Every structure is written in structure tokens, then in C-alpha cells.
Length: 222
Ligand code: DC
Image (tube, rainbow, N blue to C red; front, side, top):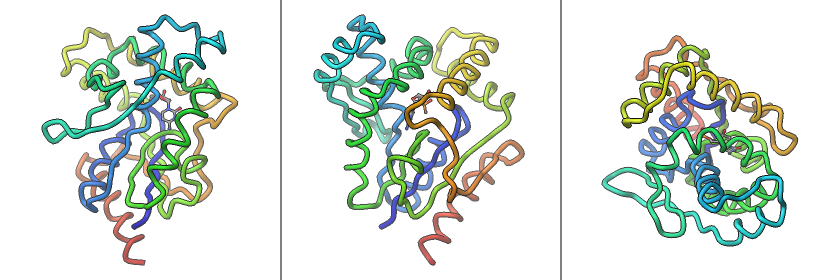
């Protein structure tokens, strides 16, 4: 069993692709963004000041993150509580990039992710999977899409979930997160040298998924 790393900007369809490939190969899907989102939710609830190292360290010591299948969907659990819905809201979305830029947070999360891949059979999506978490992944895919398309997708996703948000807010949030994610000092978002670029701006949903699954099968079949 191989490991598959899927990286890219927010709202490009990484998780959807990762889930589809995992389901096709009967591999485990891990949404690493959800782990940073769960940490962010805990920090918000505890009122942690991001610049105060002691507060950050203390809170990290209190956090346990897990995943479990709920009615056929992968849900994120924070200290035993299902937080899948709450971590997708704008409050977490607006704070998650600064939280993910904190080295202490990454030192807490990355080893857990590396451990999940020890036996192979994992499809993991995030920002630093091909560069830091699984630098030896057998297949690395870097997903991109035009900004207008990403805004439309994320907006309809949030509206479908009943969240109150405008197009301008979603665009501003994506632009800000792109900037923070790709310019931070620790593990910035970038395409690994051996990653395959998959731009889905002009692909239908099905074409995009089929292309990703074909890449995985080509790799498995040598
Ligand atoms: O994929 P997402 O939008 O749920 O990710 C949320 C944030 O977490 C994103 O702004 C950057 C950060 N992140 C990260 O730094 N490294 C990862 N492997 C995954 C996400």
C-alpha cells in the first residue's frame, strides 16, 4: 500500500479528490486541515492569545483530536466531542491560518500525521503533506483552481450549511489564507518538486475526480 499526498490552496477541491481516491482504493482518508481547525476551535473557546507561547503550549497539552465515521461521513472529534460542523464555520476559518503558522502547533500535529502513514494506505490532504509530512509519498498531487471558481465553490458550500456569509467575505478570507499559508516561515504551502500539478478550473467535477483516480491507479499498476 502506498501513501498519497494531496496539497493545494484552500477551496480547490483537495478534500473531495482525496476522499474519492481513498474510497476507490479502500484507503484511509485524512483531512489534515480539520486538525488545524480543531486546534483553532479549542484556542477560540479557551481565549488563547496566539502570541503567548505558554498559553499555546498549555492548551496543546489538553487537546486530543480524532476522526470517526458518522453516518458514512468522516467527522472530526475534539476531546471526544463531534466538532465537524463547528470547525467549518467562518469564526474558525478566519483564525485557522494564523494558528497553523505557529511552529509549536505544527510540532504537535505533524508527528501524529506521520504516524498515521507508517503502514501506508493513506490519502492525506493539506498544505505540507508532499513537502514535510510524507516527503517520500509514492504519489503527490498539487491541486489548483482559479480564484473566482474557488470563491463560488466555498460560498455555495457555506450557504448550503446555512452559514451567513457574503461573496466578498469569502474572497477576502481565501486571499488572506493563501497569503498566510504560502508565506509563513514554517512549512509554507508550496508544490513539491515531484508533485503532479492538477488544475481543475476547466474540468467538470467528474473529469477532475477521474483524472486523480487515474493517476493513483497508474502509480499502483507501475
Ligand atoms: O484545508 P483547510 O482549509 O481545512 O485548512 C485550514 C487551514 O489549516 C489552512 O488555512 C492552512 C492550515 N493547514 C496547514 O497549515 N497545513 C496542513 N497540512 C493543512 C492545513
